[in-house]
Length: 311
Image (cartoon, rainbow, N blue to C red; front, side, top):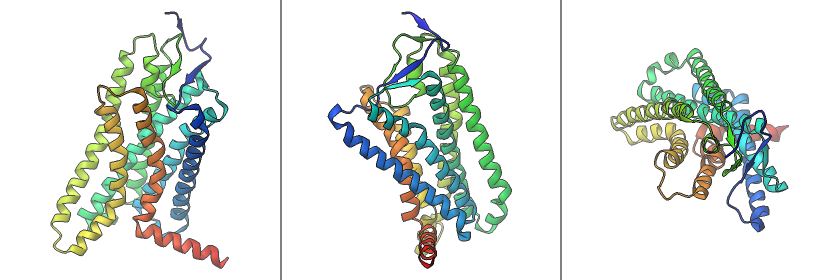
């Protein structure tokens, strides 16, 4: 097959979701409403944390960054998918595809690091409550978030630079609704062994290690909860970390099922639909999980409504 390098290549084709043409309108309206709900819900969380002094604590500091990440994460893939569905134009420029891939990896990694930071925060709050204010000071919280942003940026940049070295075959159709790194490597006519090694190494660093930290944190939390003699204490501990644990289970459950335990007969359509779970559904559900299962967020929302009503 003939080759084309990135200098002569103009665009890729995103094949999108496995949707029948007559169903495009329905799914366009569905995904548009989900995207708007995701953006508005997470921006509401940001607004509440910013305005309400009761939420100026380490846990909500991390949550505000997670909400910002979810808005950005959704905005990387969904608007382009909606445009393609509305205009029936599947093309995406080479530069646009690489840019989308970069930010997709960046915000995925940032999600992982923030979730692990929040798990550590809950560990300190439950297992070492007397030292919580000392350990989880503003300096440590800022350091954890800063390191998360730097590592995410570095990993995404590494994958992007490695991708730009590759040449691609004539068939530039991506069987996905966004520029997924794995799908792009399958289209390459070059040797992708270095890219695959980078994916494996980064996967351990930005997915497996944060997940291990989360599991260790909640293992310690579980042991501490079992030592609490009162039912009231157990319920309080569970309510403190229940929202975060729900988000972690939903997010990592989908990623592990899709990438770590793929079925041998899993089709492209099933993989694409599974990707919708953590790119569209998880950012959508996060605001509801944190608002409906969190008493502090409910109280802050009530105070905001009362303030708007008095105005």
